[in-house]
Length: 459
Ligand code: PLP
Image 1 (cartoon, rainbow, N blue to C red):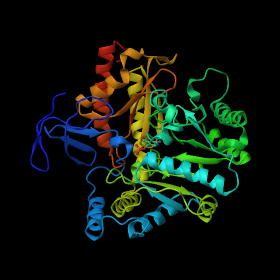
Image 2: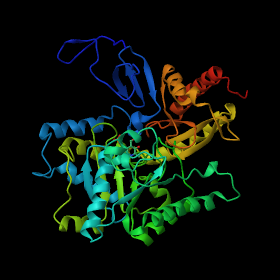
Image 3: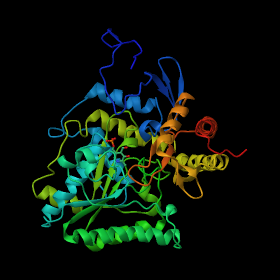
């Protein structure tokens, strides 16, 4: 890999990168960002059609967030939560509790999504021990799903690529199928299929032994693992009912769906869900600082604290600068009406994606809510025949869009049936005109993909 010579902050010329990442792909060095755009050191502009990792909800360069962080840094940048409370953490906890479903008002801060998932698993487990249910430890997840990259969060993740290497040193938890109802070939309605997928959870609970199951973890609307998969309405109430009947905690992983992304504060708010634990990160600080959180009820937190305390803690969890960023982000979401904008612009963008799907018949199943939108790439959309794996269509589409100055999210549906997908998730500040810009470049990129792979295009 060749590196672009650049200057380190210490003034030295950096020609050979010391960093390593998930892939070996050379990437341009970022220079600056504003709104929904980023520029590299060569001056090339990129539209951030993925909000970074679907986290930069308030957009880049938000001055209110930057100012709030600077003010906090001038006062105190770090105080350990074992020694001090901090004003921004207290205020952010309060503000979050106002926005979360009633009762989810006990908040614990960490530094990211995987950490938050880990914390939710540990809190759930300690609750079981504290309430004299020590046999409960299994946390059922879904296949496919993504809950993070640490050993514990991978243990509840359904992904045949990311998890197998770590199975010997972690614990693989039971999985049930994610509700890909649109792919099923039967005579049931979507709502009936939704119930059927929920019932698969009950079957799994019984198979595992109900008194050994601690919790069920799910993304209310799918993230990258399923490209914004939206379950039928019937799924949610049934899942809640099954968890209640078996005394199992329901954990909603809202790391990607939370903080206005889907047009409501939480993804689960579309169905008035009331999980026992909510996991947040990404949009909570919108990329300005590493931040995550879990919110739980007093019925869960109370016994754990009474038993001696939550056996958890990260050095940077709840630090003043990150929580100041989060507090300012919530302020900006309200001031700029970004949740409403996500709902409104999401409708516009979804309509445009559906139009693209008519032009490019290999694009299908446009789905999602608000500005968490995705679609699948098929060889034959009607028959839902996947593209050959060696086409690597998802990776090619990312690259073709990137070359044209548009960043989108894309990956083969992890662990599930063979298929490729892509996601378009711009910052919640996106305007109608900017959506037009995104769709133009995406259209060019899909045309280039069609040319390369010999896929059909309608005129
Ligand atoms: N949970 C979900 C639903 C996610 O989408 C992600 C990240 O994409 C995570 C957890 C892990 O978050 P992080 O990458 O901040 O560790």
